[in-house]
Image: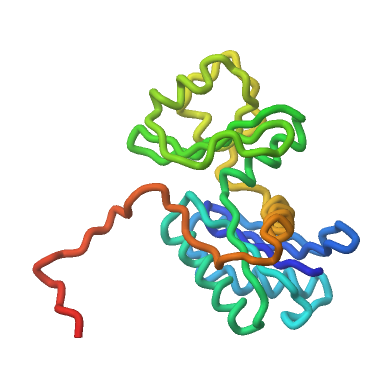
Amino acid sequence: MLILAVDTAGPMCAACIYDTANETFLSSISEEIGRGHAEVLPGIVERALNHANLDFSDLSLLAVSEGPGSFAGIRVGISFIRALALALNIPSIGISSLIAMAHATCETASQNALAAIDARRGEIYLAVVDSNGSVVIEPAKYSVEDANMLVSNCKYVLCGNGVGVLETDNCQIAHQNASAPIEMIAKLAVQKLEASGNQIKPPKAQYLRAADAKKQAGFVLDRL
């Protein structure tokens, strides 16, 4: 099975092709762009396919990061993958950025991992995965104070750009990246598909908090 995975939830715009038969990555491209994922993503995907000498028709599964992260970036990735899945008539799967980040750290450190993404406003998005790959704490939003209580005993390896705002003097830190490895998103998609018995739902954004933009009631028209 050939999988295309993409990630636009953070500052990176990334895509990779994973061959499950040989458990190898045929291509992997990541560029740090900050913003403008809608303009860059199609080209990144095309390059990933070209490097793997594949066409869209060769794909069997699509995967995308569901967030948390940039509201606009998350929407770009999910919209792209859901539209492509519909056009190709193949399934698509969403993967949490936090879970993918924590899993990647577990693979490297062989310890329980806490992934933290800076949500700003004194808040942190975090999740915990144990050394066996089981999710111990589901992705959620915490205050910095509550997050500090979780890391106070330093029983986790920490990762993610949220680590920088936590009190981590005596804790082991794997990295402070803002994005999960695109390769892990592809790997977790395979696991999720197998665990579901091929009964999966389309990707859905994990914002973990309400958007900043609010409807202006005075300008809202009645639905027709």
